[in-house]
Image (cartoon, rainbow, N blue to C red; front, side):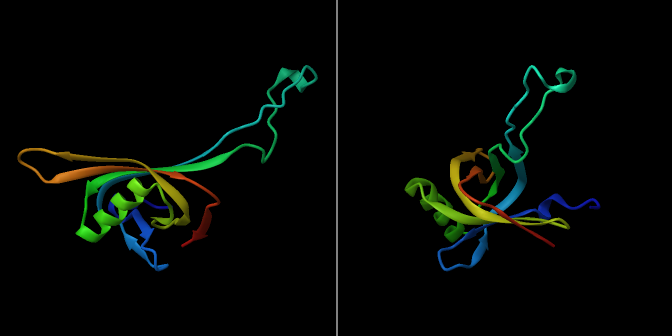
Length: 136
């Protein structure tokens, strides 16, 4: 993968109709994919090296972003999703890599405003089920 513009990383939410709409004007985004490990090391492990059980750990994804909402409808959709505690399908589009899609829950929604600037927000999502990956 060659160098890509950070602004091309997109975060989209299912608007309830099955169509995905871009969420806000994100200025910074972060996607983290994690997997827990299951240690099966025993007294009989060769050279006392740690051994892990393949495919046994819990996998999860977390997303964080900050920026400005691009319109009232995307702001309202994210806000309603947070306050209702609903889990919706989201897409994370990573340029020259692929699309990660699946259910996420909004785990944090922060608003911030400075006297001489626009209102900004920070958003955090946690995966809530099986995610799929489609290469671009």
